[in-house]
Length: 124
Image (cartoon, rainbow, N blue to C red):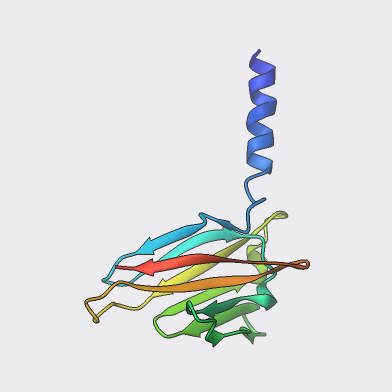
């Protein structure tokens, strides 16, 4: 029984990055913050869009640091090439301070093979 539980735990760990983004959506502090999420999207396909599809459709690439970065309105997303762990990349999201007094939302997305997906990023 103990061996079966160990095998199941290993399978769950290995499948941790089967979703496009982990977590699927996030809410960030109004004071601004930086968080890290996991993703399987290819870094060169990273984008940030609003609900109407307006935004930045391709990242800038910093060759010296090997980082793909995209910024739109109040949100910056970046993926370093060396953050790949064999299954997924670490993506850093940085939100500026929200001085509007209103909740705001953007969508960070990209491609994995021929499939596209995005995660909802809301700021209080």
